[in-house]
Image (cartoon, rainbow, N blue to C red; front, side, top):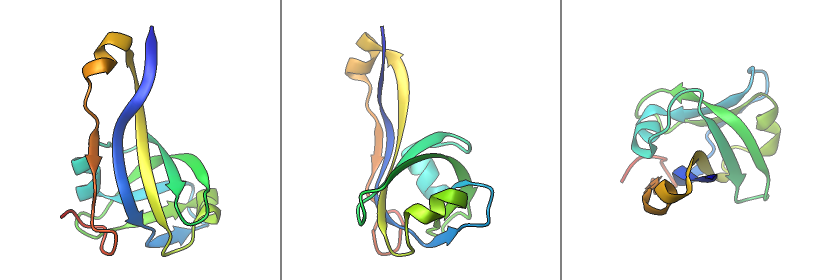
Length: 116
């Protein structure tokens, strides 16, 4: 049996941009991606603390050290610049393996979106 568990989590970052005219996705500072063990094109869930919206999209690599968190395309309608979001990815794995798996969870500075 396989189950889905939390693989990676960026806990509380601030949306810096919302680009409705982009094709779609979420752009994330490459430093945050590496620290949270996320890769480009990985599926993520974005949970908006300010308005309760939840959406699924995929990751685009943002400029390293920029603090960028940009919702693109239709996702831009789900958050405003300044909203605080949580970004989560999940993995499917064997039930027994899941019991010992440790997710990568980071807690960046919510004001700057940089690692502390």
